[in-house]
Length: 211
Length: 238
Image 1 (cartoon, chains in turn green, cyan):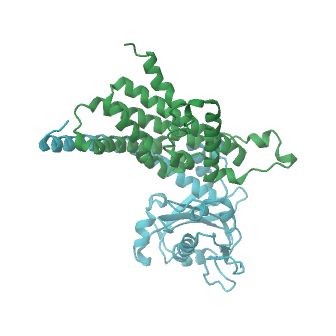
Image 2 (cartoon, helix red, strand yellow):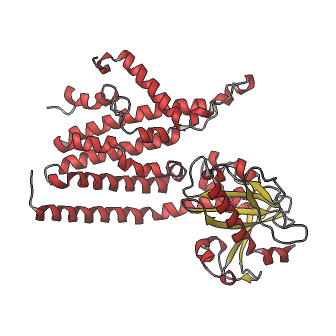
Image 3 (cartoon, helix red, strand yellow):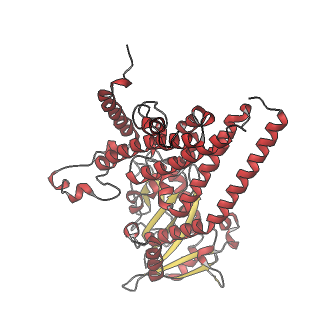
């Protein structure tokens, strides 16, 4: 079986749409609300989750035949926690300002249900390469939602993108435009996620439950 | 599959030891970088109390920019005792305020930073450290050349509630301190009160943060505790 067979590509592409961890499985919502007020922290969070999810998926998959069934959740947690601490240390060493903004949410990657979910549901029963693809796929599924939400929240809430004052440069303030303060607050993330789910379901009929 | 208890115990022990080794290696290896970041953050806080270093976020190399600004404006720093005497041979920058605050007032070694403005004015900058609701809060208070009114103040916190207590590190809160006086007309130390809305604002008080009462009161206490010990020193400068 080739490395990029159609079955393997499905592992990558499914989480982006049909089984998206945020909009379809509604996992990892907590961090999606918390870190999406600006694009930059959302981006760093996405990268961090990607690193943790992919690596833990591969590690657990490599160990899957040795892990005693009775303590498998503990083993998964230790692997995730160790990786998260590593990520946190690296962020504090190299992107200090962003790590201050993300503060506790990096630590909370440990409790991100997407990661535990993928380990338990996929990595425990599949080969490392498949698990790697599954990890990358799911973290991209998480990442693109995060970035899209952050894009709208930062643009409409602060009038900037990646810190660049877009609204000011195109001169909207001069004609009476004002930033929408609601977009900076967490409820706005729920609203944006809700709109994404709405759009997704309106063109992807597979997702609509039969009545 | 079911394994023997011995296997499970061995597995868990080995796993924990490996993880511990990896994490401690990483922590030790990255420590120099993290310390550097904290040093830069501290220098930037000191600079911001006198409204310098404001372009740090846009600078190509933040570290270089902050170092350059710090060397340019913070021309002196020294260590004093609460009776106003200078202490020789100590580096103000490396003093751990947390340890100093735990000592008796007479034994504390207190850091002072001096900012020299382009027009020749000097601002003395005093570090403050106290407790908020969830963790430590700290800041830097710069005095005008008259040693009575505040030229600027910055505060930061470890873990105050976002949107409430955490607002102490935002400009709207900090800007209130500019021009406020920590001594009254007779020269007695008054510190700065942080009052709830409704109490009329005076030249010795600022408005507290709604919903951040404990942080606000902690900040008031911090200003009193950490600035009062400099009284003798400040009076000697006037």
